[in-house]
Image (cartoon, rainbow, N blue to C red; front, side, top):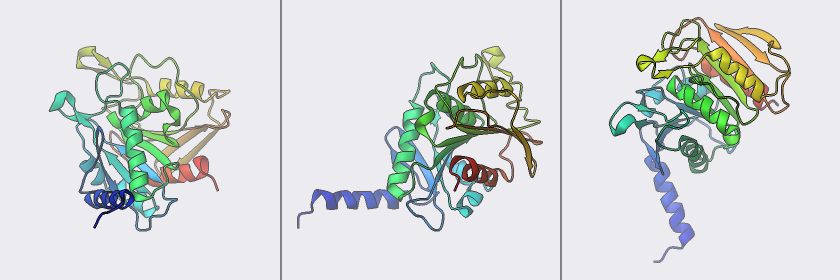
Amino acid sequence: MKLSLAALMLIVSASLSAACETPSSLCKIDRGAYRIALPENVTPDTPLMVFLHGYGGSSKGTMGNRRLVAPMLARGWAVVAPEGLPRGGDGPRSWTFFPGWDGRDEATFLRAVADDAAARFGLNRAKTVLSGFSAGGFMVNYLACAEPASFAAYAPVAGGFWRPHPTKCAGPVKLLHTHGWVDPTVPLEGRKLRGGAFQQGDIFAGLEIWRSANGCSDEKPSSYNQTGPFLRRSWKTCAPDSALEFALWPGGHTLPDGWADMVVDWYEAVVEPN
């Protein structure tokens, strides 16, 4: 019996989904792969958190992060964990975030990850937050700076820009940056790496860049709040289609407890208010 092209495509699509429908299995696409964890009830309105691991990490490690995955699933979000590529072909996995570096076109890859996950699992691509930790957080900042329309919002953790800082970003963004007060790996002031060959940037200088991109009329925050351990400040005298907030917490270089719920609350209140 001959099958129509449409029927064949349905079979292929079903087999692809079955091959990567659990957090322990990889979903392979052009240029790379990702893992996904789905909430109990998936609908066409289910949002996505695309979370980038840090230097030397992996998508498998992201899926094992109890501070990230379980709270997001409980709030009805899907968690998508793209796989970074090994440096030099066999080194630690990371992201090609700094302008001018050779490597994968990460912006194209990450958009493709979100597109594929949304289409394959019936999720809402328009409700996608790009987040990441450390090197993943640097990647988030650079992608948001260069191509802000790629995702609905951005939520970097423990990662900003490197020196020299960008002179400007392409346009307004909706961004929540979280950082640890005593982070020794990515200090708030930045630090030199490899004998000064590379230098992490100043987090507060990065916020100045974002205020400029968002057209904020004043450097002074519009509000100060506290959520659990997070000391939060936000800028609201900015472009209509923008949002900027900074959350400082007393810990170091890790994803803090309560972060996932804070991001979802921020998204629901600021990015997609009812």
